[in-house]
Length: 364
Image (tube, rainbow, N blue to C red; front, side, top):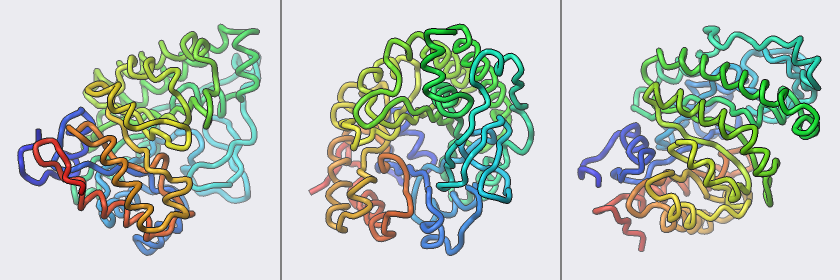
């Protein structure tokens, strides 16, 4: 139960993340849109920018601010010329999308490539620039979250591809184990380095396992190759004293028990379009997982009326917020297909109706 006073954004966010009841339901968002930057802070950044993310949070009243640690596959960290670029992993990207770009070449096809491959240095200082910039501009005490990639996405989309990985499950399972565990070692080295930076509050591990109707990889293979190493990464972060959010798009019902069993504190984005039911998730995992998300960002926030957005926000408050342990969010990110008015309507609705009174919300 909250103390009755207004909390700071950081206090509010961390209280809910730890399955407690804050003063009101916290708000978390990935601000993925240069047009939205222009609308809310008056300028665009060429790359995703820690200072700009904090400014957007300040302007809108968002409580949790995500920033990427360098080496997060798919995010461009240096300005480059041309229509493609190659990152420090040797992955080639087409500059389509912002800030997540689309990979077009993977460095690892099989064992020979892997034996000749060297992972980049996880501790280089530039990798922590976004984080330091966000911390340095965090005048309103937002919760700052450091984002890293998880092993499933890295092996199936970035270092290798889903088709090659699928063959290697059968043809060379030891290669999959080697790649996964080496990536986990790399990630642990990076989070250990990040932990020496004061002023951020949690880690988010982004690892997409699902499509709209099913998993990308069978539950059996996820358990055989990935759940154990994932637990090792979670344990290492927990030993540093940080709570952990798992970002995992899609329909992941078949492995949600496994995810809860890894020890993560929260699950984002509870994707509505992929049949992830907020009410069921909240009830089944109450006290174990803090659900984050579930506001429809495919239809309602894009093409809905202001009243549609208001009703969708109230639905999520009704289904997820009772007795705390819920952070509201779109079911992926804010992007440029959304009218700015719809974004502000959703956030204003949370501020008006998301205040707790003895663990309850007064929504009507």
